[in-house]
Image (cartoon, rainbow, N blue to C red; front, top):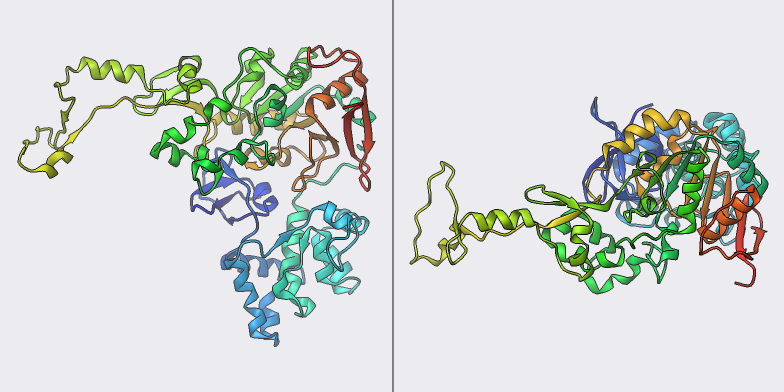
Length: 517
């Protein structure tokens, strides 16, 4: 199966696996890569919202035709009003034309004439059982359901510009929906309950734990995307068009003060760790932890005693910092003082070198011409100030991965060439899986490996076998208690009692809440 290139909204090309290309309801066009490209050493980017170009239309029309569906162009040729047909062009010009539906919206009947959640679940299971072509034959060809309504079963709302069009006009859209769903990892039906989760903990010997910012929030370190409390919600004063730009490498190079104005808020706290970090350490101590893939940059896993050999810091960390000019590297603690003051830390090696060069009193250094000869100074011409540069030390950048930078080689190498075939359980904790390529880890693991999701709110773009919703610390402490494991932490009250309630309409989704909280 081929890999793909993804062209982001900022026109930077990165390569990803087929899973992400098909899974991402995103603002991306996908292309086949050049031979020999590494598909997992990718630039970090945010999974976006739907927005297709005309090239994607042609690809999807071919997909529709191969499934026995009529591409939209056929409807245009067959007499659909040209004014309405322009809606396809609108799809490539306007954000949000394709509205992705959450299961909660389907369950609550918020979309007129949509499938019920029970119907949607049955259609999804049937698609995975018999494949796309047979599914289209069984539904659309036999006219047991309209394409318009069937789109809703797969999480796509019929766009307004197609209102009043013949049902065949929805075929290309349905092709998107079917391909997207068929490429998703299907839920394993045998895993649903809390007891199932506990049994998996006992039986598994090679557990991959994928963690995000949610496992550190109990320590006072904000996550990024929570409404009102997340870091991104507090950055309006910076005047950025997108709060994520604070972690954009191009913005950092232009003005590092933007990053360092907020870096103190996410700086690791000395020698503290949460119960969830302790749970990961407990898995290690029991010989069950294969690898902790962490998106966090706080390096708190080390505080909890998780071995460096068991950690892949997917987005780097504050553990070290490197000069952007001379590449001088220091321990992270060496710059923490400046960072906590909100200042830009500068390279001491650069400073020492500049001082040693014996600069003239005005601190100016003549540039050399391309042939190595010193340029003549023309004092009378003020424009010749460009012939001089003021030596300045480089900025010490924490060794965290910014948007636009490649992830460490270890991420792809370890995942694809070691952990993928060994893992017998995946536990995702405290992350909304919004940032690729780490977001594609669950889809890279073989589909028969069970997966558990632990966080405050569920995700809809990835199918997990068991969703355990609530405060991460509360969930892992209760799981440990039920497993008969002794998870000791001062933040876990000795008399803590947890109430677990099922989510209506979901056999495998459970909410954890401390009694009396």
